[in-house]
Amino acid sequence: MLNSTLTANTAAGGGSSSGNGGSGYGGAIFNLNGTVSIAFSTLAGNTVSAGSGASAGSADGGAIYSLGYNAAATSGSRTASVRLSNSILSNSSGGRDLVSDKPATVANGSANVASAGVVNGSGAPKNLIMTSAAVNGADALPAGWITTDPTLGALAANGSANAPFTMAITTSSPAHATGSCTDTAGNAVTIDQRGIPRPGSGCDLGSFQLYTDEVFANGFE
Image (tube, rainbow, N blue to C red):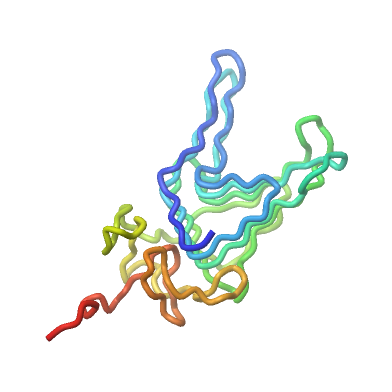
């Protein structure tokens, strides 16, 4: 996923008057034993909620919930991998923004042999992830992420009626001018989600690039 905005999505656990409530995991993205690569994207303002019942469910991973879950005798992928570059995961409701999970056992009690991990993309890019956790034996998360509020604007066209809607930042945002300008494989990314040029260095994190020379964009006399 490149130059994308995911916002106002919801994962809600189902409810039951007599049984257990379901769990809401992964408001924007739920990754089960998959390989997910995300660069220059904004996953913000998503929601997770637990279902009610005799025993309440749980909720977490408003932006991303990545789950490694497979038994030895089961076919299929056994790796839940997330690779992040120059992205924003923030302002989730009902749980942390990012969770990587690898429980000890699967539903039938067999040992869980899957792996789960989150890594930075090539070139040691920055990411802004406000709240995150590796739980139940998942690999430790990378150090050095920015964890302060990116102060995103509301979803809007931000300069072009024909462009995809984005969530703008200002020069005071911690996401401004801190990126590596490359995707998860280390390839240069030259435009944002709207097609606005990105600089060769010091790119903004997320799908929106603040174009500081907009006052001259249409020329002057």
